[in-house]
Image (cartoon, rainbow, N blue to C red; front, top):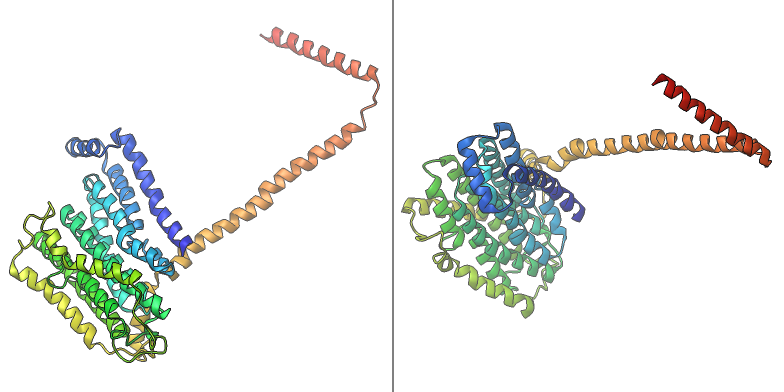
Length: 446
């Protein structure tokens, strides 16, 4: 998992480095204020051609795509859930935020290219809807929420591409706090039961009340239920883009609905129902884990009041009532669907053939890992085998041939050495005569 995360994000980092080097050469400075002034002048003068601007924009967004686990560089985040829960909290609430912050700082330059902006919108839309759908079919507790993180960062990418940086930053803030609380609850469950398989969990709601309450508050803060933080973020964003980009407003509502369905499904599987063998003796965690959960729960509940005092949001309830109703309805509809969908914990795959096909398609992330194995990984592996054969056969063969020729020449020359001083003097004299003759011939030709 660490290897895949490292290599996947390095792909984006290398492309970002190429973009930064090109930007440094074009703009002559790496200070953000200077870059923004250069971008404004470039928009008017048009010194760079469209191809150069497009390649520059694509390179600059590649790094944030890898860091934020966006399609097609999203596979590392769910594999990183193999790590311990403190690392999972940091990855899902802090690490992915760093890529979005970089994109926010670079957006005035990226927007010079309409192609790069369109790619950013497409990546965000695919990541948002695709990540929310894939999360629905996961039976691993941490993976179910890691794909949800990919979905919400896709919404942040859409907000940035639609030139809503203040609201994108606000959504990052609300999502990071709520997701951290959600993963604290997940960590408590795993620490108590030593299990993160949804088919082996159940009935711990009454045994772990603090964890259950923290999980509910964190999940409600993520999916935008009234009156927690993400509800206001979604309302402000939808109100800002509903005239210019109604399709993306629908993407926000659909992602919220699917995420609410996933959260409700997971809550029913873990906290409700009869206890399973691994949860019959599941006590509440000790105060070292409960105290941070309770403290962060209070902070998530107070998040709307905190957001009212943030500078980019002077009037947090400045959207019309029907926008708030649409956001609340999407979250409530998702909760209702998640509550009504039948859960069979004994079969993680459905016995209905067509439903099993859909479930496998989502559970295996639209078979993206298999596609990578058959294309990129296979190409790299075959190229590595060819270079190994070329190195052993051609390069090593030539080097060994030169070495054998040198040894054979040395063995032949050592037989001609007599050890007599007269032979050495004669050789030196002949060399001097040949050298002088060569000089005379060269001089005559000149």
